[in-house]
Each structure stands twice: as structure tokens, then as C-alpha cells.
Length: 330
Image 1 (tube, helix red, strand yellow):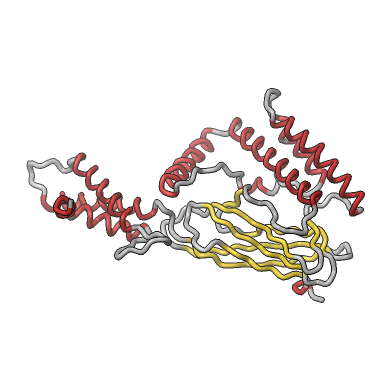
Image 2: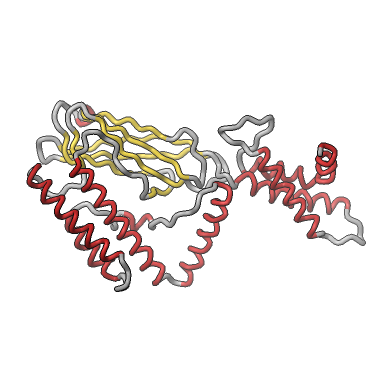
């Protein structure tokens, strides 16, 4: 039997995905090999955005209590390492890195205003694999290389040590029951299905973009051979929620400058900052009114930065007429 016939994989992604927001992808893996599958693991090899370390609990009725507890303890240890690494990195950050990090945090904070989601710190992509636990030696080394540098008053090292002892006891019990060494994967009986959920934060986008998401599943049968299977799916991501309002504000400023330049007299100031601020505010309000949302239907919709710019320019050019119409309606 070919490797591709041992398991069936179904990738299910969230229906509406917008830039800068969190979204989920689930992989349903079914054992069709006719024999038990051991040490089943699923890895993300190409993601549309940054992977988040939340909501990653397995969903399967066949997962034993010990295996479920093992996975949770490993994840808690990894979270502790990520937290300790983030603190250590901030303490030793250079001035240039601090400026770059501040810019990223400002952009993330600005995006969160429109997406109604608070930003979450993430580990750099080049450090993600190094901070993962795949073997018992990783537990020991990460404790020595990362956790040990935490201040004495920090509870993190104590929590790591407690979870480490718990994991050791669980592994000893699993070894007696299953007779195998440390494995991060799970077992999958014949005909059973298990769901691997993944959470991501989509990248900041000014226009709609299609991106690929790829996953690799590895497993063993009744031999020591590691079998692999890869699945790739193309995901369409809508522009970030801030794209249209940002375009509306920029366009309104441009529209005001065009109007002011065309009608200005020699005695008038080039820029009336109060009127400019009013035009920008009007561009923001109008762009928010016409921005496209999946759950609503509107006569006029705008979905990206370019559309916001056009709406904003029109708002800046015809701000007087728009305000007059609004006053008559009110």
C-alpha cells in the first residue's frame, strides 16, 4: 500500500479570512491503512501569516487520557520557554532592534483598532523551531539554555520544573502501557479520525491576496519507518480592516489639497489645518460606512486601500456638498 493510501487528510479553513485578524485551519486525518498508526504528528510547513500558540488542542474521541495529558504538558512547557525567551530577548535588545520592534508594534496596534483584536507578541520565525520540544533531551536543554536565566523571584522556572516532573511521570506510565520511548505524536486506531487545529494571525494586507498553506503529516506503522504526507491549499485573504479607512483618510487629505489649490486666492493660507482635519475625519466616516463586510449587504462597497483612496478624494473635494446633504437629512 502506498503512503498516500495509509491516511486521508481533509483541510478545512475558515470561510472569511481578513488581513491582520486571527483565523483557524483544521486538518482531519483518518486512518485508512487497516492497521494502527503510531506517533502521528502534523507540522505546518508554509503558513499564510504567523502561527499562534493558542487553541491547539486535539479533537479526537480515541485520544487516551495519558496521551492528551502528555500533549498538554508539552505545550505548557513550550509556552514557558517562549515566555522566558521573549523576556530575555527584550532585556538584550539593541537600539536598532528596539526601533524596528516599536514600528512593528505601532502597526500592529493601529491594525487592532479596526480589527477589535489585541495584538499578541510572537516568537521570531527563526527561533520557533528551536523552542519546540520533540524529545526528552529538548526538555532538559531548554531548561538549561533558556529557563535558567529567569530571575530568582520569577515563578516561571518553578512552573516549568513542576510541569517537567508531571511530564516525566506521564511518560513513565505511557512507557509501561505502550512500551515505547518519548514521542510527541499520538496513536490513531484503524478507521479513526483526529482533528489538528491551527490558529494564525493573517498578515497586514492593503488588498486581497491569495496565499498557500502547506502541512506535513508524519507517522509510523508497525515498523520504524517514518511515513510522510503533504497537503497544500490556497487561501484567499481579504484586505485588513484598516485598509479602507486608511485610504479614506489619505484620500480626503489629497482631495482637500486639490480643492484648496484650485480655489485658493493669494490672500488665503495654503493649508487651513482645521478644515484639513475635518476633511480627514469626513473621509474616515464615509470610508467606514462603505467598507465591505462579509456579514452585511450595502449598495456601495469598498474593500481595499485603492477604493478607500477614491472615496476619500471625493469626500475631500466635495466635503461642503456632503455636509450640506447630511444637514438636510438630519
